[in-house]
Picture: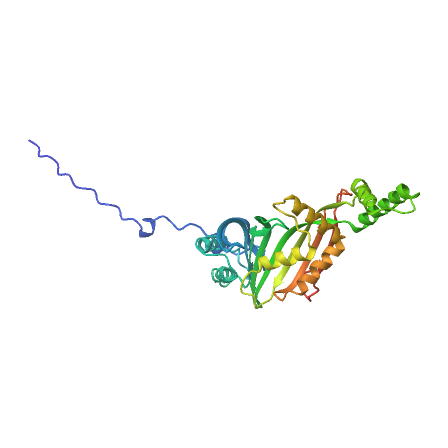
Length: 327
């Protein structure tokens, strides 16, 4: 009787140790050279969705949705590109628990460069969001929130940090040309109605004004001042409320949130006292910014969204700093 064959276990085939783990993912930026070389001023991302912990004017932190632009220069002419994920992750991780501030902006700009050593020498970061500020009514005892579109930008280069703010402020503008024409019509109608009178009593004039005072009214419109400022190097915080107040005080007729009848009447009075062409608005704001030491440079654009015309009237003025903001 034949004996059973002895089973011999198979000998394992030796594998290359390099094949026991998956190969590293290809890194085109790291491993390849640009086919057409050259340095680039800015490379990065825009429209990044972020959440900012912003301290509003009532001194409370609010989680605010924002859009960010994160970029660095590409100063190695042979490098294929930058590492965009490093910018993105640095931004998201740093903003997770930190309060938005000027020092935080500088820390992020430095981190962008640290993550691109040998590739980049300058960085840029910008946030666009709505800033909440409490505003008092003109006469009635009310306080309400107003929302102001702002953007805050920081740059880091060989010359140091540079911080820029921009805010859009809505206000009312009544045309002085239209006001003069309306007054002339009222004068003409007054002369027609009382040409045969040798004298008039105060009560007669009051009655006439009550019925004819709006025979002609000047046109007015909602207007916008978009003001961009470069901060003085000594600034260590973002003076958003200071900038908003400077603009609103200059034009004297910012739009209102809550309005009772007494507030509406006061608003009408302020419009009558502050007749403005767009040129007047731009000059007023310029005078206000010139008196504010935090602002080293500025660009002002006053746009009156005409109710008379289908187009806008626009005035632009800059401080005129050499190499600074331009029209």
